[in-house]
Image (cartoon, rainbow, N blue to C red):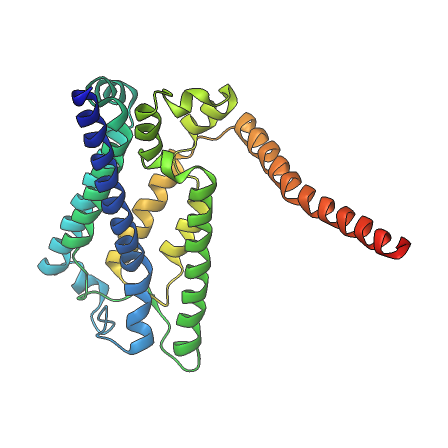
Length: 279
């Protein structure tokens, strides 16, 4: 009995620490991807590139090449972690060792890879920008437009994660079900839902692509980041017609659930009004 309680306490503590680490990394990633890139334009921060330097000179600059090599290595590190641990043989091996903490471990290592990438990322300031909005009035208005659209995209991303069961994506629900003796929560879903979860690795491709590319200034290191992650998102997209049909059916059923109470309330109000009138 005591050993079981200790095990449950360990599982809950690990899931809680994983949640704090992943949530904090997610907030830091938003700052890294959106806030930092737009904030410099809004406040007139230091230049992110050198337009006076020709490309022929910049691409031979050792500092520029060194930064690109470091940034490329960081992106490869993230890709290897994110893809290798999702590979079926490795995933099954981790599952056999970690059990219900397998999903939490995957999220924690992903957050760790992102932290390494963000902390060691090398901005390329010695090369020209691919584009830069610097002329009035767009020097002020376009960064504000970018900020608004980035905010909307991140709000949509958070909403989609909540719809797709955020606790289960982080591995919290697996631990909760294990402590209650309910088994794997994924096993309780329908076969079509399990098939969708197996294919739906990145449900926010369009929104992420927008925040990666829609910027008032695009330096060389940001081009590398946006192009690499966009390519990775496209290659990882594996939804087929059956998955899309299931998603459409689920969306339709959710809309029906949202509309039914409203119709019921209208009917109740009408009955109430009729009752008052009859009185």
